[in-house]
Length: 329
Image 1 (tube, rainbow, N blue to C red):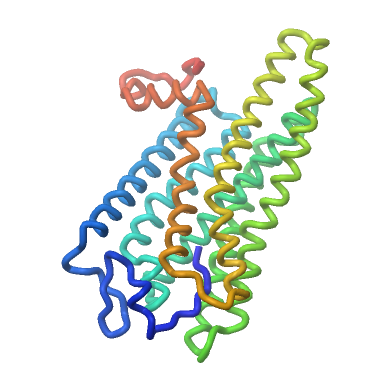
Image 2 (image 1 turned 60 degrees about the vertical axis):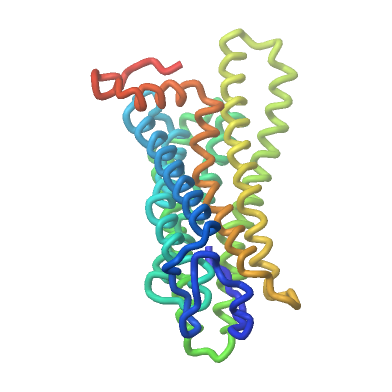
């Protein structure tokens, strides 16, 4: 995501990126990288590889194994595709055109980078919001779950998540184009990037998710107290639903840890007397992107069927025989 930051070019050297050098007030990749630069890019490259591989495993697992063809997993698939595109598109563009360089000299590729960054990040958040709605009906209204959360409803959720994300990403970037004709920061630019964008992309979905998960937690507590009066099969089903909800709540918790610092930072930027150092903003931006790498590992750690699917894919068993109907446990 791209915050609006006031750039003081007279103090530009103090905020220089370790892999960039200044040439006529514009950033360019250095021809003689330092050890810090090399280590930084090795770390970011590994982060990119893990993000792509992890989300690719989730995507292949859900598409290939029929046991994973459920409404919840369809939403998880949409989330994995968004995170996969972050690894394929946003990571390389962010390494080639860093936030530091784009703040000082925003060209076409910086605008493309910002558009994909905002759109895909927003899509991940909205997918998590849809997943929380799915979990609400699964845990709080289990008798009507299959009639309310159908594949048709899930498709509508996914299309809306991607559509709204594309509109938000495009809107923020278009508003940023007006800044070139302003002597100072345009009001509409600041309003979109630091207020409207964060509210639609982060704060509103997070409030919705927190309210839903609080309701789910309270219902799960009541179910736990009454589980002794249920049948064994009913208890097993209830236990599975609570475990799934707990796992997805952990996904959200990790998401909040990765995203909250960045959004708090860009939201309060216009109200601070001294600007936040650009390296701090860029570090927080990479922390948000790292969230796309963490979700697949959470699935693998908590879901036995995902672990089984990952093992079959990594070992190449799915290429040796037809295992689409295999029983994952």
